[in-house]
Length: 389
Image 1 (cartoon, one colour):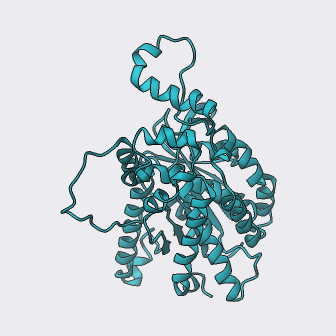
Image 2 (cartoon, helix red, strand yellow; image 1 turned 120 degrees about the vertical axis):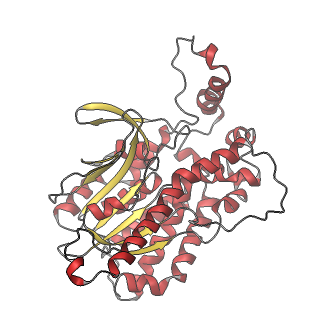
Image 3 (cartoon, one colour; image 1 turned 180 degrees about the vertical axis):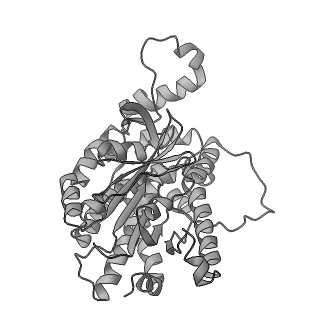
C-alpha cells in the first residue's frame, strides 16, 4: 500500500459488545462490493484495536490480503460464540474463581493467612486462549505486511505495574515509537499474549505478564487510561480514520421525575465500565473535531507551518442502548454465571450494563451484529464518501 494518504480503522473495547463491530464491517464490505470494489481488496492501511476490539483488529489484519474472508471469519466466530469459549462458566470453574474472589473481598483479612495463592480475577478466561488460536493466523500477518497489503497493526494495553498506557505496534515501515504523558508506544511482534492483556477487563479477567524492555510488567485492558484512542492510527500515518464504537457516545437525559433507587453493585460496575470503554473515545472525537475546525480556518501559509494536519473522521456507533439489548438475553447465560450476577443485581434491567460486557452468547451477539449492519447501511452515503467510492 504505497499511497500517501492512508486509511485507519479503530475498533474500540467492550467485551461482548465488540460483536457490533463485526456487523459494521460486514455492511461496509457489502457497500464497497456493490460500489465496485473487489471483495478481497482491503480498505484499511492501518488497523488499531483495544480490548475485544484488539482481537477483532488482529483477526482482520491477519487476512488483509482478503478483506471479505477476514470479515466472514469474524462473522463465523461471533455468530456462534458461547460463554464457554471465552471464560469458564461451569460450577467448578465458578467456585475456583468467582466464589473465591468474592470471598476474598469479604474475608480478605482472614484469607491472606492462607498459603494457597489467592484468586486473581472474578472469571477464568483460560478458554479464550484456544479461541484466539483458532481465530488468528499470525504467520499470515507477517506475510501481508511484507507484501505491502497492510501498513501497520496496533493493539493497546495498560500496565498495572508501571501505570502507563502502552500501544504495541507491528509494521515493516520505519516508524519511531512515540511518548506522551502516561502513554508510550513500543514496536513489537503482536501475539496472543498482547491480546489477552488488551482484553483483560479489570477485576473480571486476570492480568497478563508482558516483557517491556527486558523486564516483566502485568498488563490489563487497554481501555483503561486510554486518553486518546484515535492517536495510534494518526501516529502510524493515517490521514482518515473510521472509528467503530461499542456503545452510544451520547445518551439522552433520563426522566428526572423518575424515583431514584440506590444503585446496585452491578449498576455501579456498569457505570464504571462505561467510563473506561466509552468516555475516552467521546472526548477524543470532540478534540479531533475541534482541531479540524481550527485548521480549516487557517490561511494556507499558516497551515503549512503547523505540524498538525486535518484528519477525516467517520464514526459509526450503536443507535440503541446495548444495556437494553443485553437485558433481553440474560437468560441465555449459563446458570452458574446468572446466579453469581443476580447476587450483585446484574440480571436486573438497571444493572444490565455489566452483563452486556460478559454476554458472550450468540442470541445477544447476533442481535448486535444486525444492529451494526442496520446502523452502517443507514450511513451508506457517508461510507461511500469516506472511501471515495
